[in-house]
Amino acid sequence: MEKSQRIVIIGEENDQYKLVAESITESFEVQLIETRYVRNEVKKQELNIAILLNSKTENPIDTIHYMRKENPNLTILFIHDSQDFELYRDVIRAGATDFLVIPDELPLLNDKLNSMFLQRKTMTELAATSGTFQRGSGQVFAFYSGKGGSGKTFLSSLFAQTLKLESTAQVLYIDLNLQYGGAETFLGMESSRSIIDLKPVIREINEHHIRNVAEKETHSKLDVLLSPRDAELAESIDSEFIESLLKACRRSYDFVIVDIPSYMDEVGAAVLEDADRVYYVMTLDTPAIKGLKHVEVLFQRLGIITNDRMDIVINNSGSENELTKKDLEKFVKYPITAQIRRDAKGVLSAINQGNPIRKEPKEKKLIPAAKDIQKWVTSMLK
Ligand SMILES: Nc1ncnc2c1ncn2[C@@H]1O[C@H](COP(=O)(O)OP(=O)(O)OP(=O)(O)O)[C@@H](O)[C@H]1O
Ligand SMILES: [Mg+2]
Image 1 (cartoon, rainbow, N blue to C red):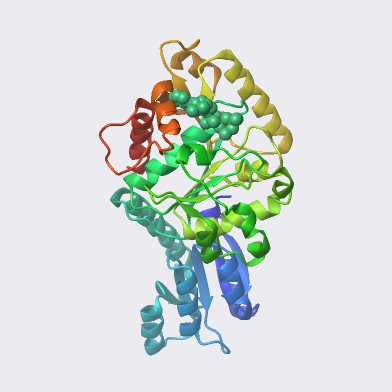
Image 2: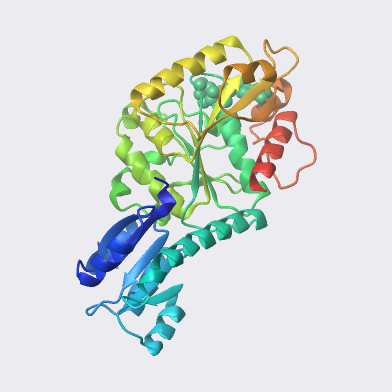
């Protein structure tokens, strides 16, 4: 089921709740949050649409204020059992999107929910095209490849910098090469802080914690969570940690770019499972195709289903490639989203100078790989 088709009902398990819950069609997934737990749950969960049942004990205005503060993009449908225009005016002012009188208007319920979902979808699309983004439902893009050295770290870090520079979006980059690191070289950064510093607060992790531990790349202002580069510390990071981290990141950023190492462990698997999109990096040669076949078997064994979430990104493309893009298309069933040229000199000289590849928006003098990524990112933002 699509995550966005989830509705939470805030209220008590009473007749009103049962009537509403039972009337909602099966295309929606319904979950009850009891009014007294709403503060906790709103903090923990990412909500899209909430139905708020009028409560005898809690003031609905307070509840709405609270929910909107935690989740500004939440769509709230207020439900009461009788007409009360004054109350309706107040709940709409407080930030509810609409209201219904149940049971009188019960036949309208599903239409209303459907149109709310539709409206959210249009709003998100609109926000993406106009360059303004809505916080709270950030997307996670994972860069992966079964083959080491294919360019995951180079491409993912350049992608994140470009996305930050070419849009108004909030972007976070996470280096999950916990034992070896790697991204700091391409980003020209050094840090004493790392993702490990979030370990003590992971249970109640919020935006504030993340922004405190994240390091800002000075040119693009990209937020970066670096790896500890310490095998022992790395071991204390598990899938549960990563799941909580990504959940919190989605709430605070529009895009979260994650660089995953080629060796597969529970951390990498958790990200691949959670990611909205997996960019699988390949070079144009037979070992890369073999690598992908291995990965497909591995994914199947681990129960990671990437069917319509995985795209291929070709790296190191150039005249000396063993295969062409056309050849590759014959072997892989995933869409090829981007093709990044090889430019050994350009990359090396940037790294040697300790400079990130991208420094400012709309740069003219870019190395070919950066141009290709710019084209990819801009077309994605359209
Ligand atoms: N398009 C490119 N043009 C020139 N050099 C590149 C390109 N892509 C990657 N490289 C170089 O190839 C090397 C490997 O790249 P990178 O570290 O990004 O690979 P990786 O997949 O992250 O490797 P690992 O599996 O070790 O993490 C780096 O030295 C990088 O500078
Ligand atoms: Mg790497």
